[in-house]
Image 1 (tube, rainbow, N blue to C red):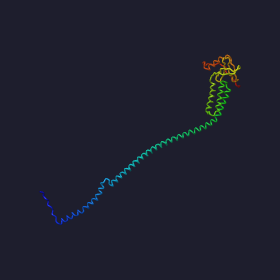
Image 2 (cartoon, rainbow, N blue to C red):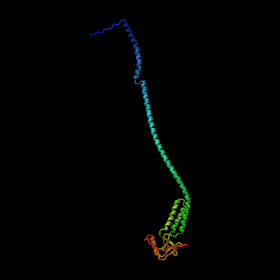
Image 3 (cartoon, rainbow, N blue to C red):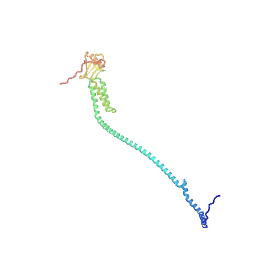
Image 4 (cartoon, rainbow, N blue to C red):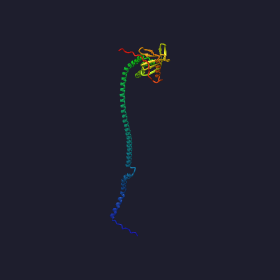
Length: 280
């Protein structure tokens, strides 16, 4: 059998106070509930993930992320522009160096042009002095051929005539005219150092005959007929042909073969033109 606890016996005054306390608690309970509910709202709001504060934080983060992306994009653009600037700068330096080199080349070419212009001016002055000299050279050559020993006369006269025609041509440079005149002089000089035999015609007392001429440099000029019967020596003082004796015919024939390189060179015993002695 359970044992009951002894209960305290309240006095009438204490019982009355206790009943009053219960009544007060029942009256204050609704008020306290309202107050607790009111104060509990912020805590509930704070625990809400979509609360206003969190929304502001999320929004702030989103804005920060957006700004960071803008910063990254600006940084990328800035880096790209900087690289382009560096490339343009290098190109500018290369172009500047190239322009400096071109300027040096232009200055050098300008100096060469100035030098060439001075040379051209000098050549023009030289041309003015050289042209009359060339004309005199041709005239002197013409007179020399007419007064010289009459060998290869037609060939030499034709050469002089070509030079006279050349001097009147405007399409031929002065240098080319000078070259051809010198060439003609060299040919005339070489005549004095060679032995030559060639065919030609000569006027004799029996009329014009075909003969073989022998030129011994410029020392002597001979001819011999084909049959060997007519032999002669040119006398420059008398400006005429002098007949040679029969004894000279074989020697002259041998000399013609030597000139044509048909025999071995040997000493020749031929008469030479007479030389006019000057008065003392």
